[in-house]
Image (cartoon, rainbow, N blue to C red):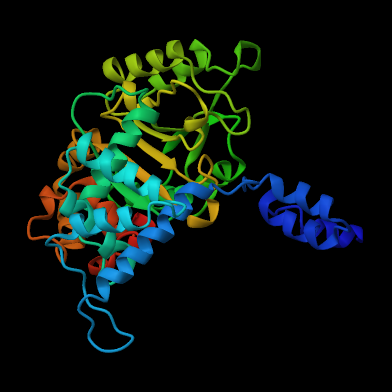
Length: 389
């Protein structure tokens, strides 16, 4: 490659540059090395996929109980659907994935106390994909299940009092896009604001603040490699400055793969509870499931934290694009919106007036759902229902 051509690639993200390098690679081994940094797994979790496709076959059978005409099924009937599912399990007990489905079914009923007909009806309709998501933010049974999972994996099994509202998204990347859009649209962040970045950090997150959509001023809060990649007290103290509007971090960090220890979490939590009750915490915790006993900032500072989790890495499912945003039901975002100047609140009432009669009562996370579809297309918002399954 000529020097003049090399210059053209200097400003590309490493993730985009790798496409050119892959084209130039000569061996399979070189291509595998170049794609490794993207985070794709080298395994496929077989059991849940067997279960998924067996559930799909059951759902197709339900749709054909009252077909419209040859080749066109009908909407599955809710009445008695759990019993029919149990019969399906019994009749196919030796089929791969069936035992997994049975264990999931029993867990949802026995442990989470979700009505079996409600659960199976939701799963069947969702996997068939014959209706728009309703509620659009997240299906009802699914939210209870994912909430329990996040409590177990992000809060070491003991979540804070109260509950989180959840919004599943097309991967963690879509979650970040929706979050920044809604923070700006709802006047919680403005162009020229200072946001802190926990560094070292996933490279694209360094680029986001520079986009003309945001034009944020970046402040580094640096981990110390000599202290097991924790944030020293003097770095945490930077967050005490009221001009810092948000702290954006990855935990466990990417690329260092180290999670914040209890002492570090507690120091940030104490700062937020005492001196910076207005600070926005945005934490990307997609690698948290690789750490035994992991605790997110959402566990110690739930009122200020926007949690992003993705199923992609731990479950070897990057192609599914499965992420979720969690915001505590009692949070600073709703309070800050309510405290905006009247001029700003008038603008926001106008923005969301087509989707709710009283926009002042609209939660921040529900505004995010509307913003994800430019508000006007809110009636078709929500994650694809088969992915919701």
